[in-house]
Length: 430
Image (tube, rainbow, N blue to C red; front, side, top):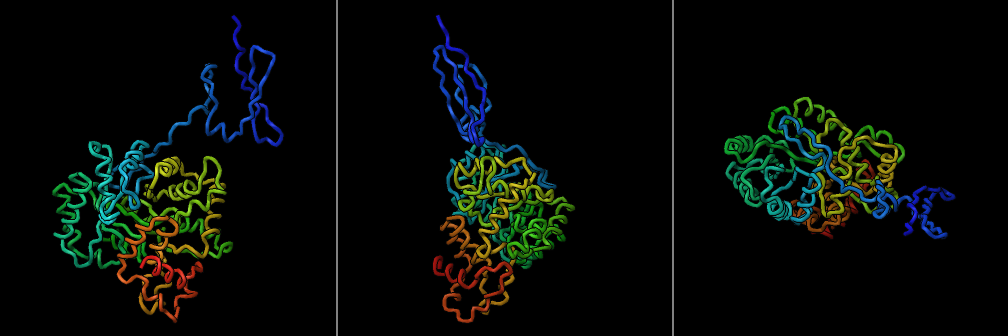
C-alpha cells in the first residue's frame, strides 16, 4: 500500500517578500503550492493534523494577564490592566475578563445608575475570594457619615458582597470635600465593621494636583485613582511640543506621583487613551501592536504607576487590552502611534486636569467637565454615560448657547475651540 510523501513545509520567499510558498509533496507527480500571507499564517496557523507536525502558528493562545502588581501598602496584587465598568451592564463581559486573568474590578454607585455594580455582582457570585472589588461615592463637603454609610451599603447590595477592597471618594476636584471630617470618620467606622478594607481618592479635574497633595499630606487614602496618559507625561510632551503646538498640562503631576510612591500609596491610572478614538488609528496599526496597547505600555513604563483601569465594553476590547499585560517597554513603533494619535486629535481633545480656560468664562461654566461629557459621546460613542456626566453638572453649558462674548476663545493652550464645542455639547446633551 502506497503512502503519501511527508508534508514539506520549506518556506520559499516570493518576490517582494510578501508571502511564503509552501510545497506539498504527494505520491503522484503533481505538486501543489499554497501561497499564504505571513499575516494569515500568524493569525490562523497552518492545519497540519494529519502530518503529525507541530506548528507554532496553529493555535494562538488566548491573551491573559501575565503581571500582577503590588498596589502600594495595601499589598493587594492586582492585574496590571484592570476592568473599568463605567460603560457596561453585561455580566458575561465581566466573566470574560475574569477568564482572561483580570482580578480587579472598578465600579461606582453612579455607573449606569448602579447597573454596572449589579452586573459585576451577578457575574462574580461564588468567586469573591478570587477578585478585588471597588466602588466610589461623591460625598460632598457637607455630607454626613450616615449618608455615606447608606451609599456604601447600597453598593454592597448591588455587588452581592459584604465588603469592598477599596472604597473611593469619587471625582474629587475640591479640597473642601477632602477636609470634611465625616469622610475620615465614616471610613474608619466602615473599616472596623469590615465593610471596606482600604480607602481611596479618585480625580481628574483641574485641581487634581492640589487635592492629591492634601490627600498625601493628611494620609486620607491608601490608593489614588487618577487621570494619567502619555499626553500628560513630560518625557513625551516635550518631544512633540513644537511639532504639534502641544503644551505641557499638569507639569506638577509627576512630583505628586513620586510623593505617593515614597509614602507607599498605591497609584492606578485612568483616562489612559487620551479620549480613546481607536477607530481613527486602525489604518496605522499592525498585527501585534495597537494604539491602545502602545498607550498602556507608556503608562505602565512609569514605575510610579502600579496599574491602570480601562473601560471594557466588548470581549474583543478585553482581549486587545489584556494582550498588553506585562509589557512596559515602549518601542519606536509605539511612539509613532502615539504621535500620530496626537496629530489626529490636536485641537479637539480637552485634557483632564487643565481647566486653564475656565477663569475667562463670565458664567462660570465648568468647561473641562462639559467637554469630558462630550468626549464620552463623541469619542467613546457612549451617549448614556455622556448624558449621566452632563446631568451631574446642573446647568452645564446652557449659558454658552446664547453667549456673545465668547471670552474663552484663544484661552486653550492646545487650541481647542472651546466656545464651539461647549455650545455643541449643550445642544446635544442639554
